[in-house]
Image (cartoon, rainbow, N blue to C red; front, side):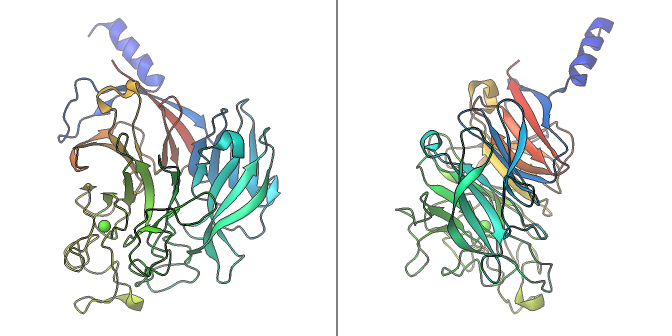
Length: 400
Ligand SMILES: [Ca+2]
């Protein structure tokens, strides 16, 4: 390599031009995109989710602060949440893993100015997680007309033998291409919750913009009709496959097996941490007892019809959380693939799926090791990543 070439490469890496690292399972590496990473925001306090409005604002949550905006002119402003926000919400709080979580923008935002936020609230006793709908003013200076459209998502309000309060809240919000709002929830370390069709924990919900059940949920008879799928553990990734619109979720495993799962209306994810005679289960919660065989993330012995995973990480749990499909021509060979982020695993994997939704290969992105909390595409197809350390990155693909 000539010195000028080496110098040019060094400069490119200094500018944040990164490549993809094959991990031995991947295919089609020849035309994988080059990635250019830049830091868009930093100094944040545990950012959790982000979303783009059609008029160029970037909305984001910080777990203990609430909902903020970076306006098109670059100014940052806390809109809703703790004291100091444009609108302080005295019922909002953060505890354990919980706090301001998912954000969704109304599909008809230009007309409605509706924004949706997932957060815990003391308006109920004991507290609940809830989805709050807000109206954002045209200048992004404040919010109004709060309406709690789904106020009754269970929150782990007390410590038990397997962990503290505020754990396993789920919390991702996304509108599907069908125009309905999907909501992921968690099992709260409560053994009966995931398979209990009368309560909203350990589920994926599907509702309209007022929180009413969406048509076509196919909830099993007698269940809460807002339930789209059940039998989940702690779902924090949610995205929709281009072309088919099928929802895919990513969820944390216990001490093994994180899962990516394509969803089917009325489906059972097969998580059931109730008492099992063969296991020692503190406070009756078997979620951390046993192994992938005796306490599986998808129990096809108890639930032969359970939805099978597209992919598992085949090992210890690494906190698989956010996910998004990659769309847009700049992604080249990766267009249509599924990006999934890891918290403890501190990486992003890009999965290649077959027509049935099964993963056929995966490739790890060469990014700095950080706890990956949110993965969102902007309107141009660039990938935005929120990391727990307090930053939001933009990762732009460029086909060589
Ligand atoms: Ca499962």
